[in-house]
Length: 394
Image (cartoon, rainbow, N blue to C red; front, side):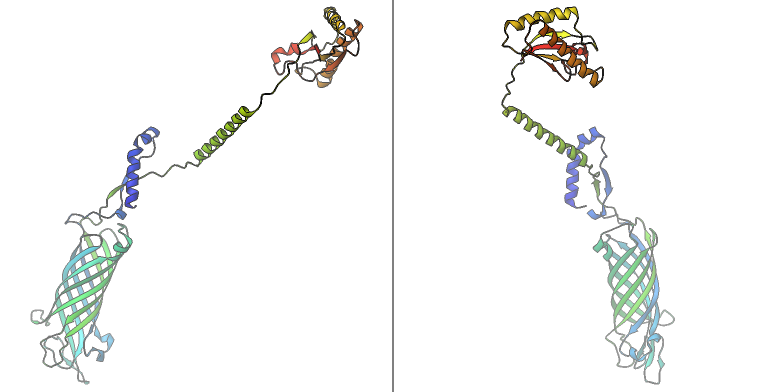
């Protein structure tokens, strides 16, 4: 997590605290994040002890005259060290190795001065001394620190001094300063134990006390070691504590609803504007009915009272023969079939027209008009008023 991300999460936490409390949202958690760096541990932590053993090949002026496989010799080390960070460490210890080579004459520091027919002497040096190395963990440096990483690649460079001893291990025959570099492949077996393969190159100054003028100013060795490391104290590294923001809620559904609402608002605004721009329609008021005759359900015959009303209307129509009238017949749609209702509409309007004509109204002044649907629309409470015949001026 980058520092900018850390800052953004911190701001989001402060600004959204009240909202998260209201919605019972997932709380921000705090964890150690090694990608933000590591904190320096106490001096008592991250110590280790390493013990290793292996073999090496000695390189000096005349060694190419000796069989290569006859030049291998044992070596061993023991170290105490400390990592000051996941990248930098230091180790101090004792190093021992034997070196097998050749010389052109007897050498005082050699444990073996075996003369060979070709004129060279076999040499064997028994060397032990202190050593110190500065170590760099390349894996943590290049790939970042991870506490559970199994493999670590470590390079080191160091220096020290070797004492060349006789077989009795008491007689000091020579001293040699050396410098060295190496590469360690470290494999973590557990939190406390690691196995390693150490490849090392060492460069030493030449032996000074020999009987002939064949002194090497510098000589070296190439060694390989298998080792085991025991980690002491706290083995991992603390990291800065950073907030982990909860995953963002998927708002696709809310966005879709918002888009639909915005579209609906835009449509309503358009309809409102259209309504405001629309010119008012002039609707001529339908003339009032001159008379309405009501019938019982399923009945189209005029009663005596109905005829009296129609007769009164006839007198009005005869007074002005220039006016034309429609007699509209209705039947409710809530009862009966379509065929029955159509018949009732025609008969109710027709019976009223017949009565008017029988009272002297001209036949071309009135006409029967059956009307589909209810007089009062879909108001079922007024169904009894939908069974009628209405006399109305055209």
